[in-house]
Length: 104
Image (cartoon, rainbow, N blue to C red; front, side, top):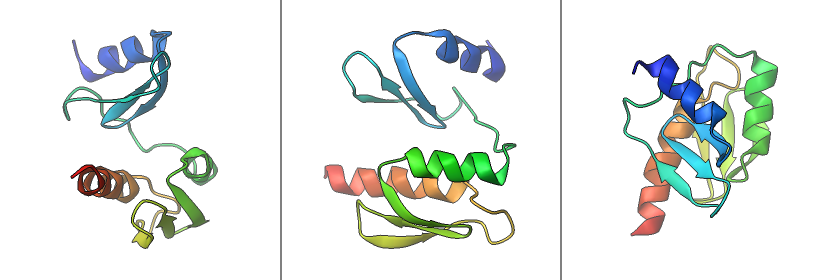
């Protein structure tokens, strides 16, 4: 299966509540399930408004600005892309490393 087919499969699965680049939220047990990096690549082709809304729905961040957000997990500012408002790639990279530290 290619990336698009795997993403479609996850989107059509009624047990999946939310899809992020490296994890999905199980709607049944409410646990995050990590995906292998190559399984799903979510393209960041959405509009700045859509990306801002995604950050607003993410309970791990607050004080959302076009080029930075505040992480509730580690209580630090996280820089986003300086040329692309509300870019999600740095946020997801941070959450992955920040969550791993919190689990130890």
